[in-house]
Length: 375
Image 1 (cartoon, rainbow, N blue to C red):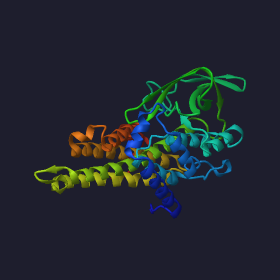
Image 2: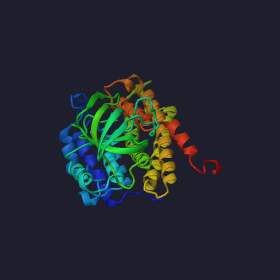
Image 3: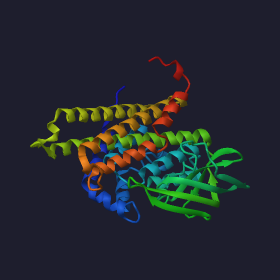
Image 4: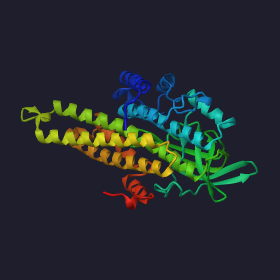
């Protein structure tokens, strides 16, 4: 299978990398993390000018109709630069509207505004005590004719406080349905906080909060799982970029750190470890690219299999490369003064978001045909 990017994808990657290298260096990133907002509207405006928010939006709503591979190109660059802007959250929200919405009326309006960078979105996947089970949903939607209200709590909603609209899974007459809730809706309490990797997350508490149900052709449990797979794929792509950056940072550091009168990069044992780090990253890249190619498969089990395989391999690579990088950096590897520590923390959070290695191994093994696979 050919994983070579086409000219447009490569040009987008190059343009985004140039912008990030020039304007989103480590110190600039750290200043944003320490700010009250935790994100930068200046950089969001620049991303909008580059067309990033419009990339996953369908063409009828003013977007570029970018597919999974197009998004992979972007997420790799954002991961390499440790970007903390709410792009992942908004892109996943766009996919939720695309899959579960009608593409008309208010759904179309939200997509159009997202494409123009006017609004940010977030999907509230997680609930307290649910762990990685997407369908363990205690939030309840109560119908009042054509109107609905939500009652329940969503936890660790990535960039939840920075979003203008949330897509919220809830139980409606016992079935899972998806609802849109504006940030300024009545009866909602938002608790914003910084996560250990410098990102932002929020707890959302709904108490009779008005909501609008998404009524597209695919808007139930199957759509929720599909949306989560999309989010997982984008996280894997971000991790690939972070792995590249961490490997580069480690090699560069070993060329400058001196032991016994020479750089430690000259020690063969350490060279072998860095080669292993590179192999892990390349294997993670290959399986992630394969998952991107298979994301749009009409066979849902093929999509699930590819996404879970990618999350497992990326999670394993994240742990191995991260631990080796910290050890090769010595004490500096756990300080906030070097990018390596922040890359390691980001990779650790990616590994535990939307299912860790054990969760996706179990999911992969539960898919039809696993027992008949010849080894």
